[in-house]
Amino acid sequence: MMMALGMFVFGLPTLAYQELQRQTDWRHPSTSRVGAPPARQFLGRGDDQITLPGVLVPELCGALLSLDTLRVMADTGKAWPLVEGTGRIYGLWVIESLSETRTLFFQDGAARRIEFSLHLQRVDESRIDLLGSALETLGNILR
Image 1: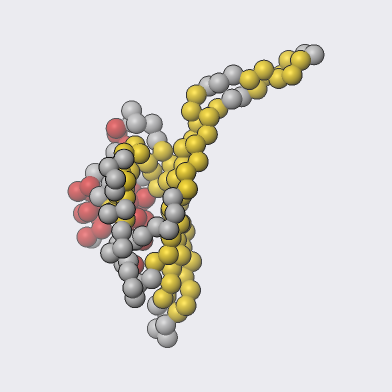
Image 2: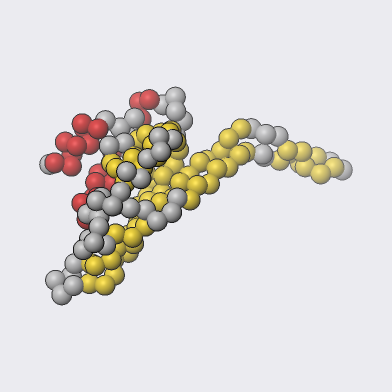
């Protein structure tokens, strides 16, 4: 297991990402002053984003169903706990976007290579009401 987002496990059998890119912002707005440079005030932490780009090669590893599963999870609008395979807990995250590019096609139109990029946004951990239900999502996937 490389990482888990809720009940979705990233790895060779499902979906393996190639890198993890994280950007964290801090808020320092400025206030204009007469005859002096603008004053800055620290307001706290800003956005926290993770991007997981990768390649899915259905012939070798990974499953096409994995991308559909992530889309179903995103459709719920819920936040999911993100946990690394090492045990590191990143907090609660929502799926902001998922893009894919399919190339190298078979005669029937099936892609041999699918490049994907998953964009996650951290949400306030005090918002437990956003927490996704694993059973609810599983039920939606099986429909």
